[in-house]
Length: 397
Image 1 (cartoon, rainbow, N blue to C red):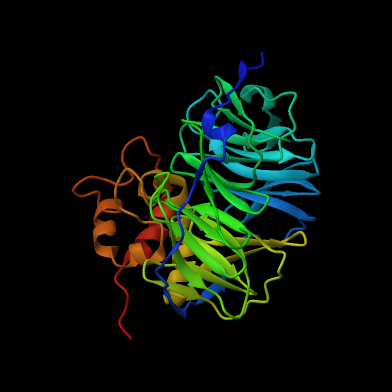
Image 2 (cartoon, rainbow, N blue to C red):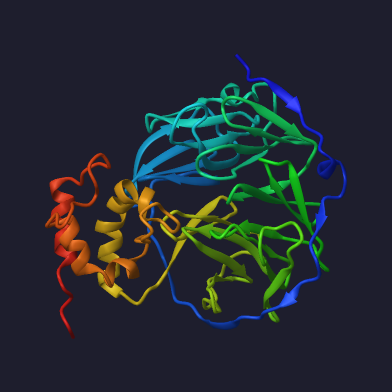
């Protein structure tokens, strides 16, 4: 049965919303960034022309003109060829159930969720959107509502109710209880719980937006990177970076990291600098997708590449990526991502490298208490042996 639907017209939505004050300058220095290409398709299986990608735990789903291809640990597990055109993909709260769903929006605007790591099931009616055409979507946070972009409105659905707002946005990105998108070149943040809008008036059109882990909107225009000082309606924007020689082309949030495409290169927004890579021959029409591992996906002309920050770990870091990171993603990420309930970020090679002894004591020796905790799942014996070998102290050169 379709969910109840109502149209909500608040004074904020019908008016202009709140306009942010003039930006303030807090320019960051540019410093070098080393990145490396990350292998994600171990056997180089044909994927067709790719439209979107999404990850949940150890599964990566590539949405292409061959269907939805489900990869696990770099290997193709299943393909669902029911739909071969796609508008968007994401990870959202699971309808009227607990947990999260990996979903794709097919070319007809239907919402399909990955079930049993094998098939993409139409769940549009679970969100009260059976008769609607969805073009985009984003979760405002990991546990509550999802915001869907329809033809001329936004629909906010939680599996029990759907509320519609007369707001037209594209390129939706979510986080911190809000979503942000672009309408006619203007970046707009929308808060589903209140229906409030915050419009960001800038000298140039916005080309990309994200919301960082502190809940602040980050905006790229063709040459300037901005970040709001706070989520309050009257807060100003800071100017973080001005690119003199290459246009800003895209943004993505990946495990707390904000990636930026600067011309044909990639950059990371750090707390005290903009870290910029050497040229990578990235096309101007590329689209960035963040990975929960901290890596970034780059999609252009149906081809998908993946890049990660080179932390200087060399072969040791590569072993960590192959043996430790998949187990972390499956068993530990829920608590140990940035902002997780454990208050300890273990999502990167660096965070493991500096804590080898402490992690070995918890994971391998089980002292003072075992990790992962009871109920979180257990690594296989082979995984434990590989992790134990990696956790041994590094030999000094």
